Image 1: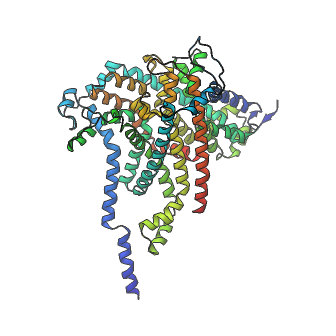
Image 2: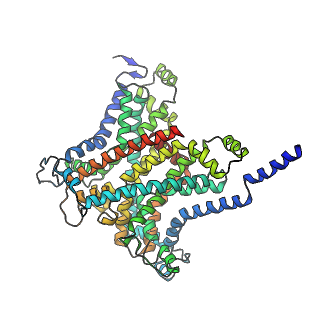
Image 3: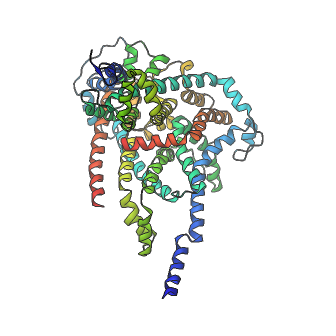
Length: 299
Length: 286
């Protein structure tokens, strides 16, 4: 057998093929299976026959009226994604500019801001459940100063807002890191030159900082929009899957597929939701990418 | 002439960092630090209160330093088992997952496989797959691995995420001369990969390992779907199950939260550059 530079020619394949087969089997194949399942009435229970029902599941998604839980979740998903993307990017940019110094205090603060992203949804969810504890958490004590009170996550009218806030708190550190990397790549002599020309802070930010970190803006906007369109784990922890006020598409998918309160699981319909969401995210991400790249070139 | 330029230069220099700006920056930094540290500190403070101390003085500092909450969390709800489960899932998934990523990354980086560029594209595509919760659930049922720690572990292991791309990128920076001299010395492919390359690519491998370990440790949805029995729960899901059961014992709940968070905080404090490197890598490849 012919040898390549590192022994037998077959050796690399001997490592590659089984490794890729394993990853493909458990990660890639389920994606294909999701597509197939979306055309069936599968319940996921053994013994119940599975029939192909064509595009019925997709029709159910799009025929949905105002009172429908799927369209409600779709609306929530879009609101959640747009607000999250705007808030995360504004706050991350401001925090990154504020902390863009090498003193110990700023470096420590940057580490603490990044901490929630690594703590995970269960811990972050518990921290804020405890914080918003209606029976006397710090948030309630704070409202007490003004002689008012709230049920917080239990209040249907503000629960969604609080979920968006906790999500911002959890993930803003990620974008801060990316903006910080972008800011540190801006050559300092550009600012010195601008200062000599008498440019003030606002002018320097608009004319130097923003154009120079435009690639970081593109990255951050794409990451936060894709991430927030897919996100549901944190909401699952904070308010559960059954609450329509905070339900997003992925969470509605979970509720439909695995049931809550004795309903028959509709895993075919859930798979169709997954496919629609996948296509929607793809279209939004690619469109935004093209627009942002064009803006970058103009700057 | 010289005097006037000096006079002009002087106010500019003080303008660069006037005292007011310095104070403003420090105050802003403190406010940000407070916003992110306070909720965590509040939970730690509550965890150190006894039940009575908590209800008599909800928002005050602990006076009891009741470490007994931590012991209770282990004694009353079997948190020790949940933590062991989590350690098992996390270490298995991250170790095997990183090894699998290396096995696919090396041939791609050296163009030893046909269509290496296509393979790279496949791994990029895999980052943007639809939610496969339902299909993975049905798959494990078919394989007889529903409610099995092995089934759950297999799914976590296969979730390699960004790792193959990250390792491929790093391996490209290792000169081909290394491969050639190893081959001349008669070193076999797998020995070369798992001794020489592992050592050379350590920063990328550690980053990949941490990313997958973190994702495994923090995973809650798959575990909720795949694992029916509490004895198999990872700590994060154990914490959530615990919270619905002991919803009134806030100090105990706080202690349990700290227990789940502590391993991550310790790791993060000691290996911070890998965490941040991982975030940046994920961002620019993704």
